[in-house]
Length: 237
Image (tube, rainbow, N blue to C red; front, top):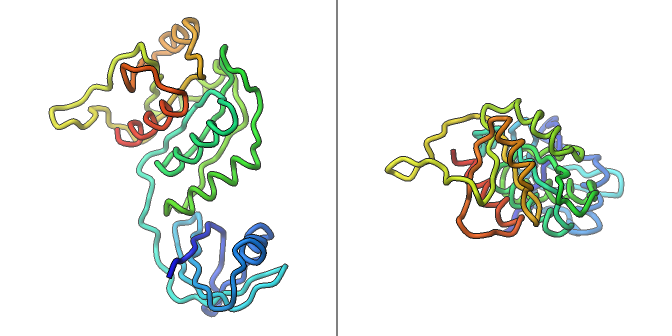
């Protein structure tokens, strides 16, 4: 039997949980049409999970009986921020979804010289990353920051131990004989440019800020492809 999983704050009292989150209630009652007896897994951002059985649901609340509570062992090993040039809607949404599945902790949309689209639907993006977090088994949901100019993003990235600027003109990531990347870091910032690529001015500005210019492939990749590959590499440094 499939068990649906949801990230929401909950409190266990006398082996019961009461959920009043309007969005969660709507999804359970009107979209998924849960009935009494449904098994549901709740996950809190504090790292605990509870396997529950639905006892009651109406338009205002749901009551569940707790079968078992346990720790979510899918801990993120790294604080990783993706500074991503805004792409057209479906492509940026794909990046947000896949970056979430790979373990990114923060997504910062950035404006670059060649950025065409200037805005995003943040409500939709937050829904996408929440669902991706639930489906991938993580207990935390990535934070999506407000849109930031490229120059400001460079300054903001200094909070991380490591910053990497991805561009096709860069050098491959250094690797040991076993294939493991030789960089060891607990916090990292990753920069991915727009469809038309970074301008020479932006590349030079990254160099002036001491960001290594790294290539994910000798081939020219679409922005969303480069971002997904870069996040995977960054999470495995």
